[in-house]
Image 1 (tube, rainbow, N blue to C red):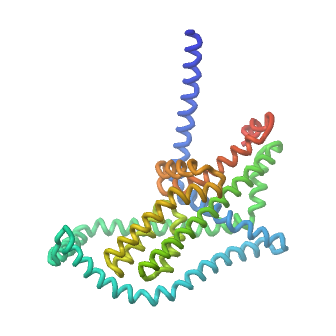
Image 2: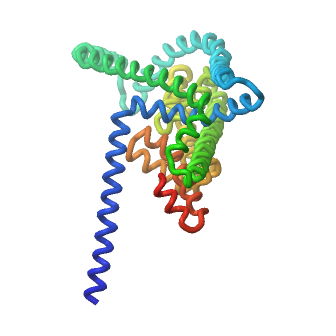
Image 3: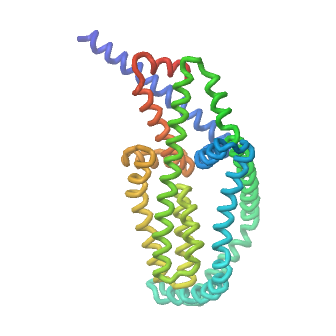
Length: 357
């Protein structure tokens, strides 16, 4: 009996130190990725964009177009589509901005009146005193504000650097994707190259499914919020819907930021009541997105159960914030696709894959 108990404890201890070793290694890798975010994030973004543009460029290459020309055609075509969307909404923005400015001044007066009638019972004199006090605080904290502006400028430079690097990486990934894949395969033993190729294809399919699922959810959000804004009578409906669409590609912060902008526009143009209606509708839509659309649509797109999607999003947000939430689902999808492939192998093949990788 004592021997069996010692054996059980030995096995538990063995599993425990292996688990701790894996956790420590994962933590070191995560810390290294965070420190190298200026490189890591552009690479990840480039891989995502390549998953969308790569198949289009491949079709053009199969029709006889030179790889460089096919790459430029796809990339410039995508940029033209984006610029076209912005150009389509620009006239409506310009026409409605003057009205928004006029409504904003009237809306500010309405807010002041509402504060006086609310339980707070704030008079116009008290509101003005609070505004003057805020201005004084800004003047007293000028050094901190300047430091914040400089930090923001540094972040802006980093963002531009990452944007340029992403563009360059996308160009080479799209143009030389097959050659890069062959080079990666060549780094593995001959007996494992077919497994590496299959894993790469499955991973690319999972990432493409994730992006298509995200685009579907973003389109649904944009349409629903656009309908709410249209019914309430809020101006700038089309720009706000487009902002909502693109914001959906940035988990947590994107949807929240787009919702805040829409509520603020409703506040300064329509008043407090309409702003509350818009804010409530956006809150309901976002809850439906997170609890229903995200698991169902994304689960079908990346072949993961809705519970796995929810847990992955939560764990990613806890571990690495916004970036973690953004990467959680595609990472889980890639891991699941690799695991499913390994399970399909017979005999000693999984061990050979592990040894080669």
